Amino acid sequence: MISVEHLSKRFGGAAGVHALDNVTLTIPDGDVFGIIGISGAGKSTLVRCLNLLERPTSGSIVVDGTDVTNLRGAALREYRRNVAMIFQGFGLLAQKTALQNVCFPYLASNGKVTDADRKEALGYLERVGLAERASSYPAQLSGGQKQRVAIARALACHPKYILCDEATSALDPASTASVLRLLRRINEETGVTIIVITHSMQVVQDICKNVAVLVEGKVVEKGGVAEVFANPRHEVTRQLLGRESWDE
Image 1 (cartoon, rainbow, N blue to C red):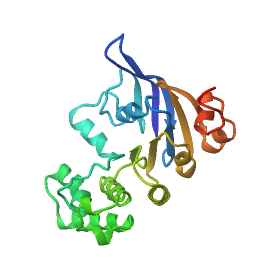
Image 2 (image 1 turned 180 degrees about the vertical axis):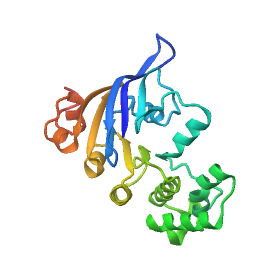
Image 3 (image 1 turned 90 degrees about the horizontal axis):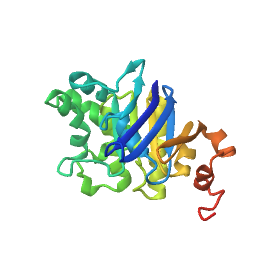
Image 4 (image 1 turned 135 degrees about the vertical axis):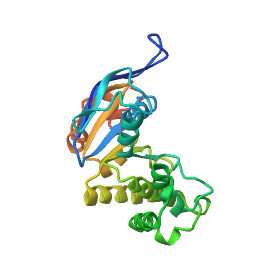
């Protein structure tokens, strides 16, 4: 379980930008948790704090009972092994094949890739439906296929948590639906916790179990997706659902 407790992140000192303001969230194990908001709401800052690419200004992140907020060195590297990232821009190595990209976590962790690693990586490509494209380079793949390779690479990290930062925003609707179905199936089959950062209520509706709405760095609404969709309390939630005009 991830517990975010009174988390704040300020850039530029006391007079700077307050990207996160007293955020408190609980993300249960095995959940598919959506964090939604318009541009500038603080979504990406929050996900970067969760994997400690950004250090919070105050507050804490407690994962499985351990406060990870101030981890350094080997302890930080060990924590990050449990937290995989899937990015909007895929993050694939252009000069490496799909299989080599999926094998990258093994290389980064152990300094080498064994035959057993390659076999496991090929299994992950098969799981995402791309075993036959193992020798293809990213330039030879569609956007949806690239994101599937990125998902296979994330699975190669053997993560407990997968952070998806606008993972489908660069995809067409058909590819988006395909990737979301894949992520939902992976969650159901493996129990991995998936945290979805998005600006799309449709994405939240299609895959998430619970959701938090961010506005100017603050959580203004949270709860089960069905509950929030049925009874949105905040005006930004209603706007994101198309039930209230942005011009009003």
